[in-house]
Length: 313
Ligand SMILES: Cc1cc2nc3c(=O)[nH]c(=O)nc-3n(C[C@H](O)[C@H](O)[C@H](O)COP(=O)(O)O)c2cc1C
Image (cartoon, rainbow, N blue to C red):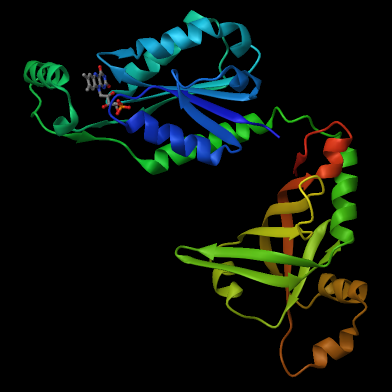
């Protein structure tokens, strides 16, 4: 399991809000300020450092933290972000920090920040007022903070950190995936389009590396016809924490015509093709082509690998 730590500094809350979102999406995770940092956090694998940009500089406490902790940070996957109004200026400062601590970061991002005049202390209020006068900007709030931008960045960090999982060799992982899929027969199929979300418990067959689902029809097709992207879960009942087994498949779905492929799946299922075709209602077949499989299995951990294994097709 990869654990994520977000160390941040925030004067007026924007960087803190961003840090919380990044930690949430990269869980298991902890977020803390420099003052709240505990030595045991050094064990975390994925480290993200965030600061506001104030007077064209990152917060001194964050720079100090990065400098003082360089020894262990250099062996980690480190990402840097700042919240700011001027993203070019923010990125420049992040690059300088990267150079200063001599660590090759895995990602870096200047995120839109907020300036709420009513929140500012007296010194900052005066400072900003003078600056806005000087650059001839109206003295008013500025809000470039956007949850979606932060969520996208958090997802990017997640994907990058997954590259550091202790992975099983591809062929062994594929065998374990095939075994699991072949020894189960029921999944939850999640489909979506705009505000419409649907999860459907449904029987599947794993055949030739694809999932085939036979269906009389229904609401899932309202989503599937407009969005072929699906997520499929297959899992065993929870028993205890050291016996977890579950799989999430991200893939794309299509409808199979009554053709040779349709017939061979029916044959595989042990169904009479003539009977299915003579039914008074039309039976539909969904084919799911996996793009990515995330497989959580305590057995992997026992064998010295990460409990979560990812197979990209
Ligand atoms: C005193 C002060 C100076 C600032 N200086 C800059 C700056 O030089 N460049 C910039 O892009 N944003 C600047 N900002 C905007 C902040 O980067 C932005 O408001 C940020 O989101 C604040 O983060 P926080 O809410 O976590 O403290 C400044 C804001 C304040 C209050």
